[in-house]
Image 1: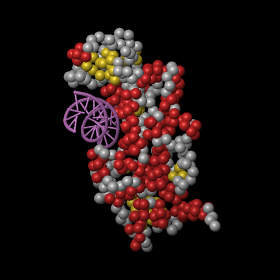
Image 2: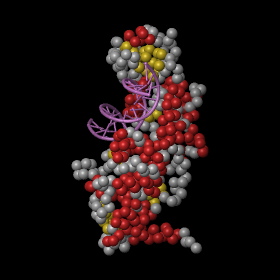
Image 3: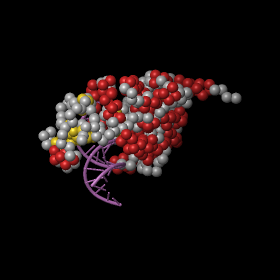
Image 4: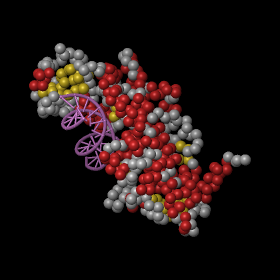
Length: 439
DNA sequence: CTGGGGAGGGGGCCC
DNA sequence: AGGGCCCCCTCCCCA
């Protein structure tokens, strides 16, 4: 016969003992703050403590002390509260640090919940954007053009975005049902439903497979092929690891100088010399370590596949605003003062901008003559396309009815019609509608 | 088949 | 913290 309340009661009792410092045989020093705990509980909860305490098991009569500077006392409070209660108090502000700490402490359940939390957070932010575009879609649809791809992920399963618990509010409970109610879409799944210019679809479909792979944590070790990443991975001998847990374990085991499990070891000071920044943020998906939380947030997008910055002109989505800006300048604004044909430097006088579909580039007058284009279009409708940076300053991808219409028309117009325009480098660039107008 | 160029993408870091 | 720039790498296309 099993009494179901026994486990929770036992944990409750242990937590009470911890709070009252009863039978605590372990002290954890985090940035000067001392946490009392029970060796047994820590041993059972954390791979890190398991290693640490098993090394010191012979000295069981001595109280164990561990010192951490890799995370803040607040973060460790969240971790320790989880260990003694099963409840993980995640917020949008602390999730990165908690995940980083959990990775350090080898607490895979916590890592998983953090990942789920981040995913749900990304889903919500994506859905908020999607909802926005969906609202804009009504404008587009009213013009007779369907753009159902943005709202597709919602309709699936009749879920409302508001049915989701906000990551900033919720508390996940491992082993409970609090998280199971979420039915997440991976970023790659979302991508599959997003709009693409016709000429991009083939390319994107190839890249999607990459993203699908990335979105599977168990395969992340195999994801990177760049030399840069290889360099990072080399330091911890990850080549043969296949699973996420194995990866985490290896990080802890094979670091040459850091992560040593000695009594009272100041792990961070061994890992990072004094002249380096003390706080580092480790990616839970790979071995990458960054100095700033913002950089980790940015890096995480390469694992989640989140692409929050769509190009207004062609619909292609980017994970970073600067990449979108670069794309927009290069592809749609013809910012390079180089003749695309002969590669010579051109000016407003010596060259002109040529428009091919949504793509714009420059040709020198000689190459223009060679191609056989010698006149400017006469009856182009005006089209206003803000650069991504201007757009983000303004209304954060807000599409007015007018802009929305022109955007949709451009996306739909995949023809390779050539349109020549006068070079206009002013910030308030007035672009012309794409129309077949070349003889 | 191969080399060059364009475009995309990731990291570091400054403002 | 976010934006943006620079650098580097990879992939793809094309001659």
